Image 1 (cartoon, rainbow, N blue to C red):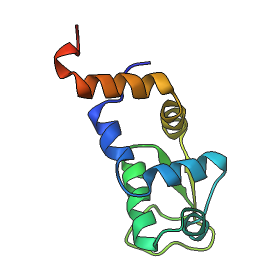
Image 2 (tube, rainbow, N blue to C red; image 1 turned 135 degrees about the vertical axis):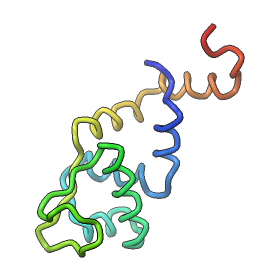
Image 3 (tube, rainbow, N blue to C red; image 1 turned 120 degrees about the vertical axis):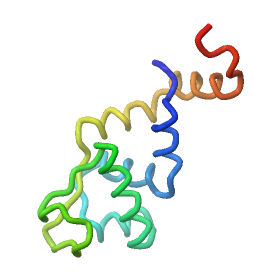
Image 4 (cartoon, one colour; image 1 turned 180 degrees about the horizontal axis):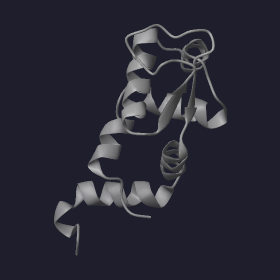
Length: 111
């Protein structure tokens, strides 16, 4: 598997993004259940969810899709196909090895 691109590395480097991905990989969550599962503040989880939604990895259901309105009790979050593929990549040791080698030896990239 190829190395992670810089956008993916930047995304998964954000606070709580990996924890949210892991939780949503198990099942759909509400904001409250994500906060409990990830043991993070509302603001931190919301930032992670926004980043993941922008990347196409998470879908928000039960609202009009506006981030400036509070979630209703039926609002939930789930992984998209892109999100599931991202989780699969995160558990692939070859992808991590290639990323590490690319970052450690940039002159070898592409050779």
